[in-house]
Image 1 (cartoon, rainbow, N blue to C red):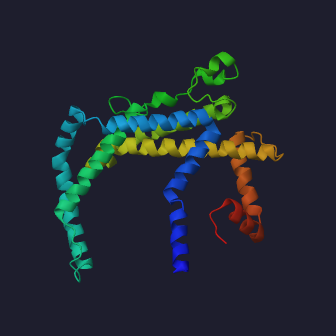
Image 2 (cartoon, rainbow, N blue to C red):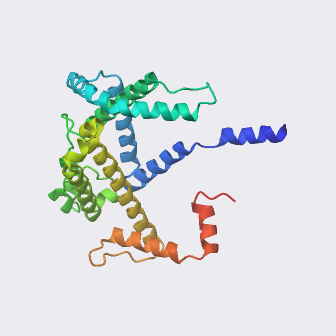
Image 3 (cartoon, rainbow, N blue to C red):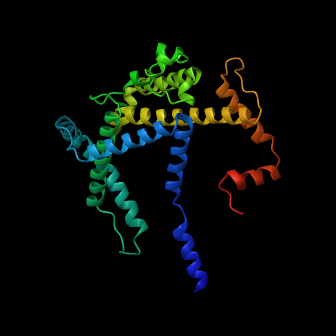
Length: 277
């Protein structure tokens, strides 16, 4: 009993993986842009979420959803049949659970609610325009980025944050260009492919853009932190050819990782990885 109690206690003390991931991502944001920016950004997301959840779906969105309904039903009809047949075969020896059409429709309604609220939040945070279009101008490179060294220019730069990534015009130009590429890729994705699915026809470009800007921001912040860490340990990090200092830092980190032997990797994984002894 004591052993079981100890195991149960440890399970209660464990931090869930999702929470740990959020902590890592928040700390990455804070280390990259500064604590004040990270706190303000998190608060903006919370406030936008609360506002959108309390706001009924706009009439134009409801009309769009209704116009999609018939196409969606046609698209789902074949999938429903296949899912029901597959589930019945898998569960033919038990009556504990059966997938029904009502289950699928409930799932569809749940997804529509999530997507509607997510779209609303993206509009509130200006990632999308009020018309639901990708706001490519949000991260557009401006002359202010090139003049960031001047004190009077800092107040005009969205990501300016003390002496961190927002104070480096090289980093900001790199980030703005790559975020701009996200808008270009999502805008140029072939329409005929998106039109094959009612969902992708309406939300495909937004979904691609949303995932792209998140990956770009986190990837570049990670490169920024790698550069700073290497410099603190006495490593020179400078641009080489077409590679800026942040790409060079990423390359140096990869070389150091791959040049380590198994013993070094084992020790490193214990202290800085997810490995348990």
